[in-house]
Length: 219
Image (cartoon, rainbow, N blue to C red; front, side):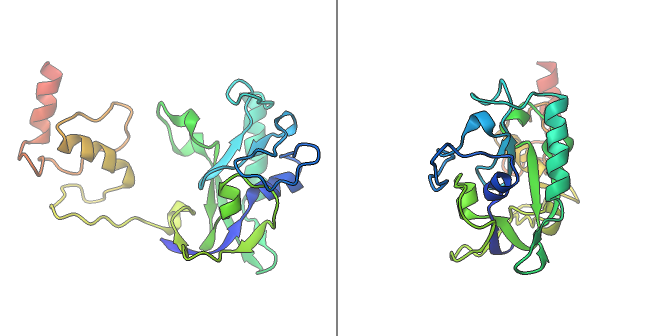
């Protein structure tokens, strides 16, 4: 975790900079993007981690063509938002914006955001931003008791793994958790998973991982 003292409403930033439009007469206060005019919106935010493009054929009212037009829009947003400064505090709010397809892969890639926002210490999507509200300040104080978060630049919040079993991998990562859980339940990791089980031997059954894989291959 790191501190979360200032919220950033990127929906408001997208609106101010011509990437997100509101319906005629709408005030932008409705949650879950109900006030958004999708026929004129190219990018939007909902949730805690990133930015979605309004892709034609993926979103029901998408207007951004997939392929090169979408790629160009992603690069434009990455350039403009990378290093975004909170003028009121004189602090860098966003360290870098990452293109999701460059840092992740797998069969569920299209269900995630197109861009991942790497916030600096003290910053995160605001509560209004995460629930699809557009109106408000781009930056505002976080007044909730939830004063720390990990939805930031991943380089700032390396994870700490607590385990009551000795693990066999010297440098575990978050991507290793799902394969490890599958191993514990006696299931082989899916082929698309990047991680690997942290135990060479199942800590609950004592069975050696390599033996289970050989049996699976033979079957």
